[in-house]
Length: 327
Image (cartoon, rainbow, N blue to C red; front, side, top):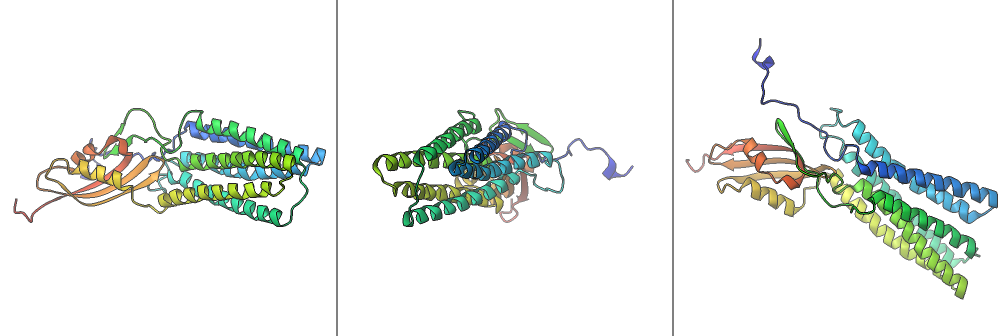
């Protein structure tokens, strides 16, 4: 029997199921909100066709764009989970959800630009508004989006906080404490921003339409729409920036890097010569480091010293002996 074929208890299989790819509450919530949005979209389109209401018909079509974005978010969760063990994805499928969030942010920004262009046109060329009908549609939209926002957040969770505490240290792995796998989930955040953006637009529309109906301020409706569009553009930019950093393998925040360096150099003898740390999915960080030491410490010693709350799932640490000091 060749040496390579002998079983070795210290060699195991790396688990690449990291980056928030497990079936989680977020996936179920996004699916639920997608179904709600599709149902309301169909209801408004049918009602618009039967009653001849262009406002209902237009809002139904508008709901379709949100259903598309939410459907993309739901599909990203499914793809990441089903292909988690596909070896063609060398660092897992966690970034799939960030890719979906990036695309969703672009869609949101494009919608905001269309809204702004339409509002400017309405300011230059005012049109007759059917106030009662428009307010009813805005109220329906607001109710649907409030219900959707509550469904997406679970009524109490905060998007973008917490950590996934899964670690793979060589041939062994640790699961630390409670599950915060929704940490920095840009996909869920994108879905929530779509819903909140529509809710903000609905609130602005209700206030503006009521004031215009009561006092004849027809300019207020497009003016409020322009303000809402600017706010939504800012949210879309934030999403593009954050998801783009993940997709481009941007380095981890300085505070986290300093924490990791402090743990690796905690023995007072070791020095970190090189360190690369980046996100590979929601709550999951990849780490490649080179450490110089005078002692006989092994890579696993440094891996065990890594902070448990950093979400480091696949650390690779090179240990070099210092010969320059003659020790």
